[in-house]
Length: 186
Image 1 (tube, helix red, strand yellow):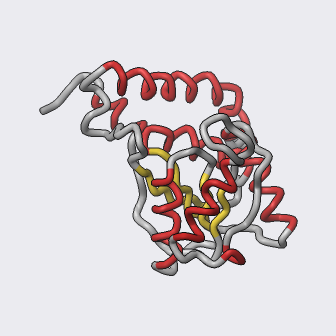
Image 2 (image 1 turned 30 degrees about the vertical axis):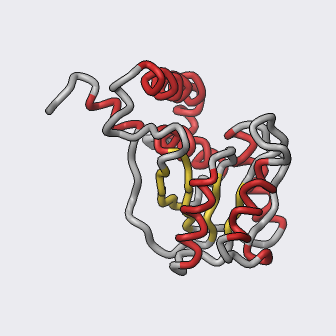
């Protein structure tokens, strides 16, 4: 069935095919499904490192990084493969601080996998493209503990509200970046 808001669904909910990359990045969160997906990709050999990002939050008793790291270790990811960024408090900081961690280690990714919540995929990708402007991104979207998917987000207010908040944030956060992304015609 087709709906007038199908364009929103297609814009907000997407993922790409997977390919080998330099790093798997997880822009924070208190949803174990994020690290479960990142660990699966790691074990499938898509990248040698996972970089979860995130500082202290009331949603977990520690930093988001430590929460995600402990899940990764339980899933068999070696500690040496989990890079550390535990200061970020929002998606912009997840991106900026992750770039700092990678560059400090001498890793300048030409290709990276971004593992994020399904309805956060578009905003996360645009955010990371600001800081990693020479990196090609692959996106793995994950259904988190909210259960929001592209097939059900429009069925009740508890799912509609967070998706529409994300859509609003895309407009608010990136309008001023558009001129920087447009190449001069000369």
